[in-house]
Image (tube, rainbow, N blue to C red; front, side, top):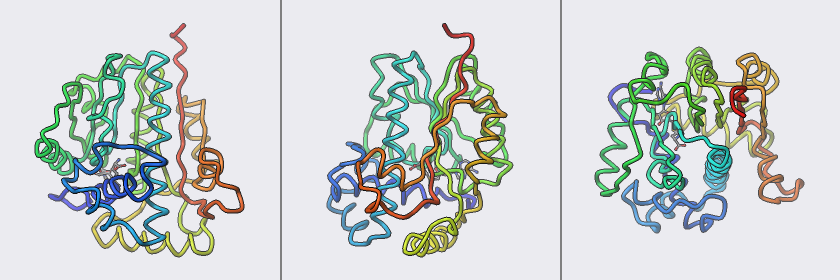
Length: 284
Ligand SMILES: C[S@@+](CC[C@H](N)C(=O)[O-])C[C@H]1O[C@@H](n2cnc3c(N)ncnc32)[C@H](O)[C@@H]1O
């Protein structure tokens, strides 16, 4: 990330979610605050993001990863989890919507300080109230995430759900693994994150789209540098105690969750969304 500027890819992801509300009528993921956090009308979001197959694919992937994560959060809350940490939150609005506030769910947002300052300005501009939302600035490349969480009053001994979307591609391997280690230290830790295997894993059109994306994000100062190979990642998570895992590539997500016939599902296989959990042996 470039110093002294908010994340441009966070702006891009938020625009995809905002446009999804109109262009696909929120079919995959409904977010009533998606336009407000950006300060745009639904029409403006749709006009800025529409009319392009590359953007549509990315939009649907971004909508799907949020949907998958929030679905898992709902299951975790039903199991008794009362803390969600949104890592690299960007303009994600889960903490503002907090659909589990009545059950006492606390939400913590961790992000690069420059992006977080911008997010706070955006929240103030929309006049939103988020009493159960706490901010914890942290640069994953430089700072100690455990300390940032402790400073924000996250209970490190309580089961915690970590939502970490759209971040691993921008991190060095060391920062990503350090973050995973911190996550896995929490008893009953649960995480949903996405990762990429690299453009070569996609085929045909999907690969061309992927290569264009690499160029686009590098041009705004946020090059994609973090890649994972699914089997090696599964072993690494296992070694960290995150023994329960489910990993889906974008094609599988379309088929399994959205009923797209396999032969019509997008051929992209490089992007994955993974859920992993460290069972809490002390729980009943
Ligand atoms: C593509 S955006 C995703 C934002 C959000 N999770 C979403 O899905 O809309 C990438 C996010 O990662 C954060 N990020 C990138 N590098 C970071 C670092 N070294 N430390 C902390 N946050 C970082 C950015 O600030 C930004 O919020």
